Length: 343
Image 1 (tube, rainbow, N blue to C red):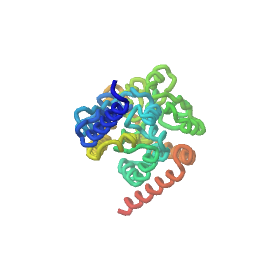
Image 2: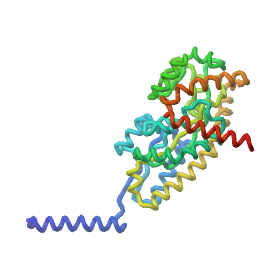
Image 3: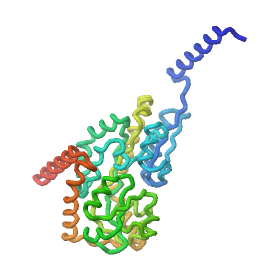
């Protein structure tokens, strides 16, 4: 048996050599980046995440890997955030619903019904408040790789109804895990039924829910339009989200790997931004071919929904959206519209 002192010296020398090799790049540490998303497999969102994973592998070395888990394979968005917090996942593409589990300020981009009229307004507000949103997410341990959108929330129903007063008599889907939204809907006379996204089709088929406020592309992919055969094209709210990565994971990467991820994410954000302009129209056209009826929105119908949104804003402010952020977004929009009108 070797003397204990010799064994200890050998171990220390071995550890020192190992650390030197890692530091100089002579030994490459194997690492696997794990990314989750609710996006359907094969969708443009899934492909963008795969490209980010590819950029990581190419920049970090051949022993690296990147696994992308689409189709809610890692659970709900709340589950995904919890998994990132404990290190089971490294990154995720999240909607505002998931991002709000990290910091509620992001809700201002989606939870203010009919506050935004166009994508230009969404872009302008996002860019104005993005630094503070990203700073708050960073304080919670997450780095934003990119922002993105997935269409406008519109209304799909079993019957040809158009007015909010008619919707109050139906069982309407609400996002599971958002009790503040459910409470507001109830206070306004609606009948919300909170369900996970994965249970929507079953809920429609069994009659548990009759009205569905979702983006057109979600209705198309989920085949919800086969049950809800009527659509009311009211742009209720934009679906906004971001792809975030654990700050500990990101900080552990070499600078050139961080740069590669950010560059590919920027390219992906540009692709998604271009795609959003046509995806709603393409989804609606595809559903029309399957028998969807798109109802006409008259000025009277639009006013009824605008009045409903205005009634909701005081309830949303402070409960679903932090009051300070709500007021800031509203002020930015007022100034933006005034400038546009002046020009």
